[in-house]
Image 1 (cartoon, helix red, strand yellow):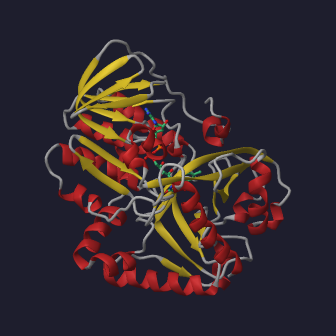
Image 2 (cartoon, rainbow, N blue to C red; image 1 turned 60 degrees about the horizontal axis):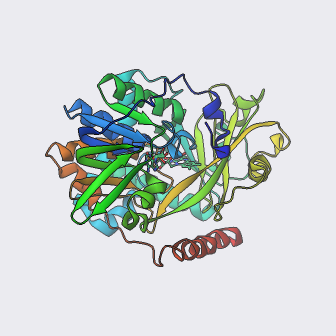
Length: 421
Ligand SMILES: Cc1cc2nc3c(=O)[nH]c(=O)nc-3n(C[C@H](O)[C@H](O)[C@H](O)COP(=O)(O)OP(=O)(O)OC[C@H]3O[C@@H](n4cnc5c(N)ncnc54)[C@H](O)[C@@H]3O)c2cc1C
């Protein structure tokens, strides 16, 4: 991969994928998908399975964006808790959101259906940074169990050692329905499945979309693409393709490291669960298949990456695991998380264009679902798509230049509040 930010463990351990650079001449299809991340790949695959002819255009390589470089944590649901969703939207909508985003694990279904080899493991621990956070987690776990029959384990502070060898946390909730995986190999697995059902994949082709009066023309490189439907699945880059949609998200840079394989890996995370803590700028970590600690921590509100990513993330890791403070770090990489104003994804349809973006750091599971719901809506059944499309959304204030600084100020405020306790 060409991006210096993608010196990632995932790129180094990716399955072989025969890149698809062939194109030329004008093309036509039922559905043109822009973006080869989880959203675009899932939409392309699901559309082709429904009999549409599909072209997927990816500016770089499959999995180049957030999908190929994320923390690999598969956490059911959205950034809002189920009780927050019910308080805001009422019982019926909360039920529908729960059925889609918590109950129906489309990633597991895809992995099973296509036999995707992506180091899938079960188990996720949400770790409480403060006693107050633990109280809130406990209440939510009780609510999930009584209201939705969704069982998790509440872990008292004294029992946290069975999951994590860190003294920092005040308790947690373990969810056996959740898990973790190698995200780039999952993306490649989806691409292989899409290829097999006839999706024409064009990598290294940046799509652009020119509006001329009521007419809009899609092109990729030198080729014009004539499509009945377009799926804009470009997440952090969505504003480059469609400026108006770009107003709904800001990109926040987030960084990960992978240590060298650790002899004491099983002692650090005895249940092999992925862990995310409850800080506003959260720490999240897990073990890879070859026993490295993959650790994400610290956000940067500037687009410029730190000169030394390992040095930037190491203090966060050392705070959680002082016992490996000086361990060797083999990889450091980063990516942009597209965040919406309310942290709920922005999904919808404008004429013949479908879009889904702004998963706000919680997209590893829901993006596959979003892609499948787009295909379902395109084929004429929009009921489930509308459950997500009806989530409220609002553009960030400020024009192109002010939007990011204003959003950054808000995020810095919450990060500071978190640090002050
Ligand atoms: C560092 C990091 C850690 C994260 N950790 C987690 C986690 O642990 N759990 C979780 O649930 N979520 C996590 N996320 C969020 C999650 O990865 C994203 O929500 C999800 O991958 C978004 O997928 P996507 O397909 O919508 O976008 P992307 O994967 O970003 O794909 C968009 C694609 O569009 C392509 N593109 C852009 N413009 C064009 C164009 N003009 N023409 C053609 N192609 C174009 C890009 O090259 C890119 O490949 C993390 C994100 C980051 C960055």
